Image (cartoon, rainbow, N blue to C red):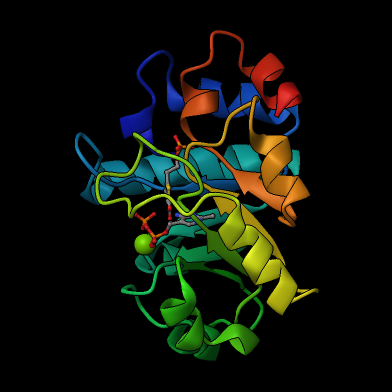
Length: 194
Ligand SMILES: Cc1ncc(COP(=O)(O)OP(=O)(O)O)c(N)n1
Ligand SMILES: Cc1nc(C(=O)O)sc1CCOP(=O)(O)O
Ligand SMILES: [Mg+2]
C-alpha cells in the first residue's frame, strides 16, 4: 500500500494493525492519484520501513529503485515495463525480486531465473490500480502452477476474505492485498480472515 490507499487511518497505524493481524511481508507502493513524491515519499518510506524492521517483516518497495539505495529494503517488485530484473540483480545480488506476469506472452519474455516470485493478476477486479489489466481469474494461477511446480506465485487484484482461499487452492503460495486491509473497519480481523 501507499498513502493514497489510506483514507480511514494513517499509514503507520494501518501497517501496525496489519502486522498484528499476521501479514508476512509489506510492499511500499506510493503510486497513483494523491500519492506522495520527493522528500515526503522518502520520509514515509523510512517510517514504514522502520516499523517493518522492528517487527521482522520483510519490506519491499514497488518500482522506485532509488529507494533501494536510501533504505535498507528486503525486496523490490517490478512490472514488465519497469527497470529490468537483470539490472537490479547485478547491483543487488541478495535482494528479493518479484515480477508481475499477466499472460503467456509476458511469461515468455520473463527472466524467471533472476526473480524470486511472480505477481499474478489481476485475479479479480481491483479499484486500487488505475491501469489494471483485464482480470485473469484463478485460471492464470493454475496455468502458471502447472508449468512451474516450484515457482513462488503471489496472486493479486481484488482479493478479499471471501476469495483468497480460491487463489491459494489454484496454486498460489500467497496473496497480495491492498483495499481489504486499508478499508477494513477491523484490520486485524480482516488479515486473520484472509
Ligand atoms: C505482488 C505484486 N504483484 C503485482 C504488482 C503489480 O506491479 P506492476 O505491474 O509493476 O504495477 P504497479 O504496482 O507498479 O502499478 C505489485 N505491485 N505487487
Ligand atoms: C498493485 C496491483 N497490481 C495488480 C496487478 O494486477 O498487477 S492489481 C493491484 C492492486 C491490488 O489492490 P486490491 O487488493 O485493493 O485489489
Ligand atoms: Mg511497477
